Amino acid sequence: MSTPVVSSHPDAPAIGDTRLLIDGERVDAAEGATFDIYNPSTGAVLAQVAEGRKEDIDRAVKAAKRAFEWGPWHDMKPAERAKAIWRLGDLLLEHDAELGGLETLDNGKPFLQAKGGDVVAAAGLFHYMSGWATKIEGSTIPISFPGRFHTYTRREALGVVGLIVPWNFPLTIAAWKCAPALAAGNTIVLKPSEVTPLTALRLGELALEAGIPPGVLNVVPGLGADAGAALTEHPDVAKVSFTGSTATGRAIVRGAVGNLKKVTLELGGKAPNIIMADADVEAAIAGSSDGVFYNQGEACAAASRLFAHRSVYDRVVEGISKAAEAIKVGDGFDPESFIGPLVSKAHHEKVAGYLDLGREQGTVAAGGTYSSEGGWFVKPTVLTDMGDESKVVQEEIFGPVVNVLPFDDTDEVIRRANATPYGLTAGVWTENVGTAHRIAEALQAGTVWVNCYGVFDAAMPYGGFKESGWGREMGGVVLDDYTETKTVCIKVGD
Ligand code: NAD
Image 1 (cartoon, rainbow, N blue to C red):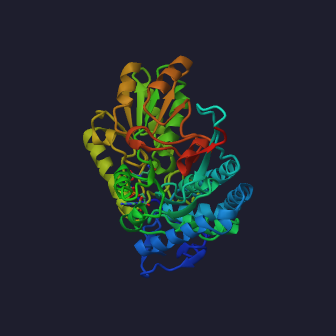
Image 2 (cartoon, helix red, strand yellow):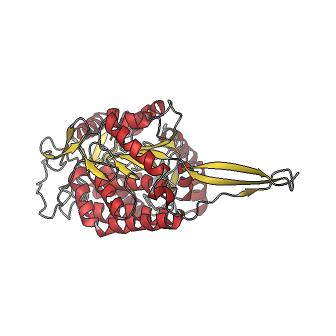
Image 3 (cartoon, rainbow, N blue to C red):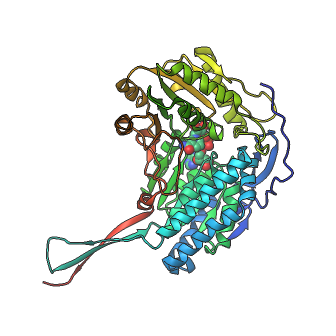
């Protein structure tokens, strides 16, 4: 593949301050360390970012603990908290071009998608969760001693929460976690991915501007094995919420054992997406193409195993191959680009390895090539003629690669769809409402989309079955993961 022509967009935003944000102040890392971040469209160094380590995490946790225990955040009425969280959502929208541009520079994703998708989704989280700040209620419990006890529950904030986020939707996933944490009254140490720290730092600044007091939302970029591990192990952190790879998820669980902090995990996926014989095949092809190729396929929800009923299999292979070939791959600031580069050199090499394996073991129906110099580009790729047991079909590639797999009957496709350790998302395309319900019930997945794919909303719970994770993001249900239930039992009579 020839490397797409890449230009630096004149409107790309200034990168701004790349120091840590602790207790409302921009500060250098204690040891003065920095790390480089790169522009994925060119492979060139983009900036140096302060590298937080154990001591910095400790400083940030102390600030968050102080802010939780006393001061303006502790004393803030829920309605005031709601107002500040709502204002933060507004500020994200007011800065959509800047934040979208930072995401494109840092992650590579197309600017229009970053501005119109990632930033809007992040703002939506703050707006939705602000409403919950005044509605986190307990209940009164009629226990079995009438007239003697008054018993009720309170739902209380946990304290300091550590939020560890990945590089694929840096701002959006930070918002998935920060918004409910704030709505419930917690304080935060946010550790963005070392690959994409820019929008998290800006989010922290905008939170201050929105009226969220210093120390409530601290942002400490740093390496996973250092800053991430220090946050996970810190005895004053009550909970860690993590999104990333399943391997790191296991490390987080081990690291959290010391103080038995609460852990929620949103991990990998290898989503089955099933086109039944009676589906609207053209709609299914279009939706399935977006479902796997959006965001360069760098999505835990990517619809990477496309099961097509044998009666429509050839049409599906042809259709999705045409769709893949039509996709423009290029610099994220080019408005024509639907796919930007992959996020990093290391990740590009990993995806290239799967493409090489796919070429050896199966048939390349579209794409299959990747750049060898300059930016980290990969052509959207359609693979066929591969067995379910292949590594390419089983493992999360996190790139724009789909396997099309034929099937003959419903029980068979359900069994094969469920035959991975993952259980995050799934899709079904059918015109038969009974089939839709039956398959939606049978699939082991946290979200099942029917006749659509990749619909997300702040009000929709999202998370995984099996090895795809613990707990949920978004929706009212996420607040259970950011609160403790306290039972109060008062003697009121003999
Ligand atoms: P990762 O799991 O290594 O990193 C995610 C976050 O965890 C980053 O902030 C990282 O610094 C931190 N981290 C890493 N090691 C840690 C540790 N020991 N303790 C605490 N925190 C730690 O993911 P990655 O390197 O960014 O990507 C690797 C693979 O993970 C990808 O190729 C993809 O398959 C998968 N991934 C999944 C998701 C998802 O949404 N489920 C997102 C990104 C990546």
